[in-house]
Amino acid sequence: MLQSGRTLSAAIAALLFSVSASAETLDQQVEALVQPLTNALSSVVFYEINLLGQPFPLIVLWLAAAALFFTLYMGFINIRGFGLALRHVRGDFLNPRARGEISHFQALATAISGTVGIGNIGGVAVAIVVGGPGAAFWLILAGFLAMSTKLVECTLGVKYRRHNPDGSVSGGPMYYLERYLWDRGSPRWGKLLGSFYALSLVIGCLGIGNMFQSNQAYVQFVLITGSDQSFFADKGWLFGLLLAIAVGLVIIGGIKSIARVAAHLVPFMAILYVISALTIIGMSAEQIPGAIRLILENAFTMESATGGMVGAIIVGFQRAMFSNEAGIGSASIAHSAVQTKEPASEGLVALLEPFIDTVVICTLSSLVIVTTVYPNGLMDNGLEGIALTSAAFAHHFSWAPYPLAIAALLFAFSTSIAWAYYGLKGWTYLVGEGAVKQLVFKAVFCGFIALGCMIQLSAVLDFSDAMVFLIAVPNILGLYFFAPEVKRDINDYMRRIKAGEVHLNGDQ
Image: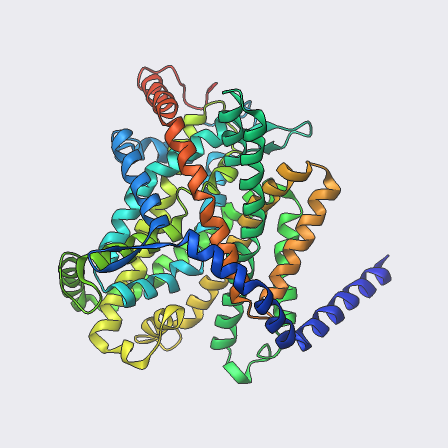
């Protein structure tokens, strides 16, 4: 058995090496095949309108408008429910007799692992370069508003989830969108809409939560280990294989395994990044007042080289929405597995997700850049994305890019394991819950992780991104239709807690 295992491993390694050797040809062939379709889809999904002289993607406006609506409609639940959300995460209302697979904290950690990715490090730098320092202010505001959207979609994810015979749980937009139309006499249209969401999710997970993450982790790893002198410089297949094996070992055990890893990994990587960022910001303490003034002034300045206030709003909201994914519905899949009898309880927990992902992590990234990059002219070097953030960290400590690279690798790994679960639930919605069917998807997912380190498939990544944001259209529509129901559920749950009808660690 051991010998056959070694033979299989050698065969896989040889296959990946052969694919890597012909990567350039494969790259060009796939790009040529997919690019026309990508261009057509992206032109629709990311269609831009002119807003006071600045291009504004309609999909960002769609997500931002929903976040504002739910914040107002729910009576600023992102403020009213914040303390209660923390109590749930702490385990105050844990009910071990409730159906589900994971705790409130594990559900939150899994969902955060799916959103805290490379974009929190490099994407923020891009936003500030394009939109100016003022983009940081609007990014924070967008994150605050997005908390309400997460609450709505994750409440629905738990309320309309399905309990499988083996004790596992399946939930997410494909289920509550199907249920909405089913209850109104259109079961076929409900199944069709759910299938469209699930298929788009499966395609999207292979890009945004897979190939992009592994590729950026590989690039950053090679960069800090000596670029051309790095052992892995020409061995993307090997790095990808190791990363795929690591991801495979976690996702093979399903949501319980993913949640256990996320519950340990997310706090560690968040603390690592927060401490590193605060250290760099502290080293530039004298620049903090000027940085805050620059951010606020640029956020409300009508004229500037970066488009002024309008440009800052557009870029800030775009980065925030792309970062926390509120309105896409993916996080509700992880939250659906929570152990609770009260859907509203997990909706409250979910509002913490954009707060941590966007308001905290992205804000720290912004302050690192504005306090370091601007005063020292680091943008004059032509750096962008994660390379610019890395240069900002290295300004005070030459070794600072190393913990940043570790954080980037952990971010990529955590995002991959979460999106593997999202994609799996989309897959099982389409083909069924069988063990063999799930194993097939997991194998394909891990294969794409290795592939992402070997070839640059920008057209494929762009296509998957477009598919992921395309599903925000039906999901947001569904959230609007369900909004009165969710509002009643949330208000009733909070009323019962206040009246003492929901007991600590009791029957909820």
